[in-house]
Amino acid sequence: MTAHPRRAGRVRHRLALPLLAAAGLLLTTACGPEDPGFAMQKDLAQAAPAATPAPGAPGTPGTPGAAPAAGGTAPAAPATPKALPAGVPYDVTPLLRPSHKYLGAALPDVPATMDALPGYRDAIGKQPNVLEFYAHWKGGFDTAGARRIHDAGALPFMAWEPHDRSLASIAAGDTDDYVRGVAKAVAKFNLPIAVSIAHEMNGDWYPWGRQAATPEDFVAAWRHVHDLFDQAGATNVIWVWSPNITDPAPNTRLEPYYPGDTYVDWAGMTGYFTKTGPKTFDALYGPTMAEIRGFSQKPFFISETASEQGKRQHADIDQLFSGLEAHDDIVGFVWFNIVKRADWRVEAVPDTLAAFKQRVSDPRYGFDIRNP
Image (cartoon, rainbow, N blue to C red; front, side, top):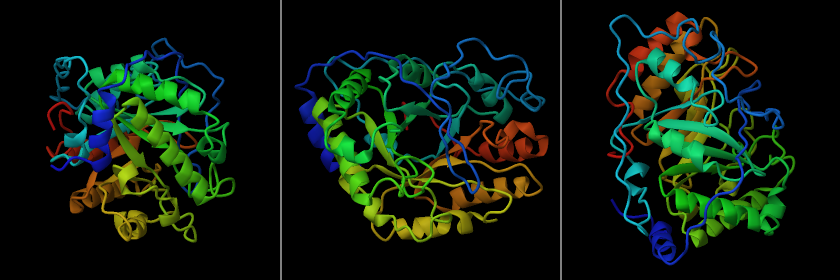
């Protein structure tokens, strides 16, 4: 596979840079749809719980539907990887277009605690190999949390949310000291991580959305942050550009928000199956995919999805997986398995869980990220 043109330059630059330790705890917040499929901020002041959730909590053992089916076994944890020689940057190129599809999840309180992972893994019968979490622009990089995700055999996927900083100020360099600190910590982490900046920027439900920032602001901020990561030698990042599907915002074109192929690795999409929304995969994602293909051939990655509970839920599962399997250019997805304005947990309804478990049992879903 041909190396990413900017990544090759980043690797050379990184070898000459010292690696600094991370400082501070990265604050996490759970996204999730608010009709018609939007993601909203959680209370950032609330500390992430460190204790094991009580029985019956979402995604934990004891939750209805969380136990594996009779005869089911949970996959063994992946072996601990060998450390790279000092000064050798991690090459994420093999992870950009893998031969199998990513099986991702967003789970409660990950990565502050991994308590939700065993119950979810046992429920669906397979280990997720992407775990998405939501990070405030104020926090430092949670190196320990990212390592917990990687040690569980998954790719950390950080959705980076500038709630208190405008995109224009980020582009102007007002947060450069902070961004450099995160970039250096990510470089020192030296394991693969996916990063998305200001996701769903084409909507109006976030403070960085179309009502608060221009496409030019977004592109300038993205490129500026990306360049600071390059300068820090953080070549271990998969950059995920993540607009919302165009259905809620049909008059907002995506191309003006695109930073360019040299700044993006995956074209992400956020799109949920809701009771009143599109009923098929093609209706939900098709217009967005067609629009993006007009200006980029980057692989697609569904950054957030789930199905709202109701009589259509089983059909939604079939639509999601049939759509994934019909498109070789979609490298994977993240299921938002958190209660947020609706109960999106796949294990909450036995029929839904059975359908999901049957579809993810296909060997095309999930793989060892250390040997893609």
